[in-house]
Image 1 (cartoon, rainbow, N blue to C red):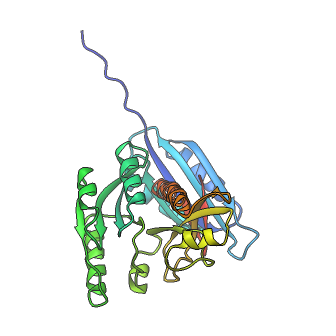
Image 2 (cartoon, rainbow, N blue to C red):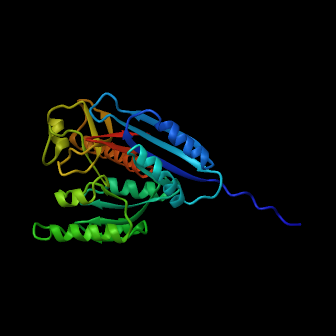
Image 3 (spheres, rainbow, N blue to C red):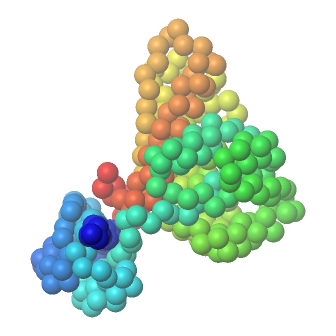
Length: 293
């Protein structure tokens, strides 16, 4: 007596798009999915009519009831994308985004991302950890991730950035995460990786710049600390914001306790930003973002 094989689960995809807002976009997308035998699992949309952009944004999670390749879906959707002047993409939802993590001498965000990835909390595949120091080589390798040491000086900065670009291309990396990487990226690198680099920093800027911002904040008696995860642009720490996290503090919190709390909120904000980006939930809207979380 032969056992019947269970039917294969439908393949799932994510469609994201942005385009000038006009009538018929949702109808065109839903009709396309219906005509291609696909089923909408979840759909989110936003029309930015209160700003100068005038753009419409949409994210659709759908399943293909019959076997179909992502290349075929992209080819068949191209005409609709062109007719509405869409910036669009289709990705298999099970596809794990390949990322590179970059770090200097503060390892809390690095360790958090490595651990979340190991337990499956982040849908990413870490291609490598890159650092201008060797402090976290052992930690990185304990997770089975390659560690790449790229020292950076004024004389070697351009060479090191080119090596990073070569690594990104060779490894098929889609996202670079600055997990407390304390080097300013050049304008050339920012442009080459536009929309593909996420940074994390404390949210005191511009109030407390320079060394020991948490100690400066303590001296001023702050009651709220936070962290901001954003895309990197040539304008230092002014790229489109993806996520922010805050924590309330009181007068009896010491500078060291502020630092510890700051590390926690930095980890939380960065992890959410990486997760949402890797799930194709973040769409750029000029200097801002639309986040379908």
